[in-house]
Length: 206
Image (cartoon, rainbow, N blue to C red; front, side):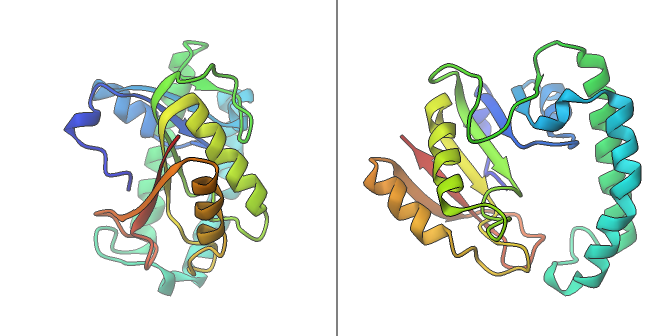
């Protein structure tokens, strides 16, 4: 979803809003240097595990009601999706517990990050900015992406869809505002699509 390539192998990566996902654990195991930030990391592994148990079936039921919004190719069913997500969260929990203040998981959130300028090569954000366009304002998206480019050479945001599967109405306005502020903005297709039509990312450089 972020078009990561061999050229990014040595990049120091920041994941924004990573939540209980296995990206950090799997990327670290492959030799990448990754820091994840999310407000959920202020809680203990047991507290996060309980939250996952409380919400897992609710999320799956929501997906079941809206399954026409997804492309069922690499993931073939709701049940397979549930198994993949629970396995990913389990991988995260083991890694989060093992890291134990090692610095790879930081309790922080957009649009204000506790890192100095240019700390990272890439800042990534998936399924947060643009997705919640009804809940989060255009100003929030602009401030968040600007902050990502403050702490990293480049920001990548995926997908460009809002909840419901339509392209976020913030995309054009946010892109324009960032460009007027001096950022280079590129929207490009990627080789990943699970949400129908969700195969584009925004690439932003300061």
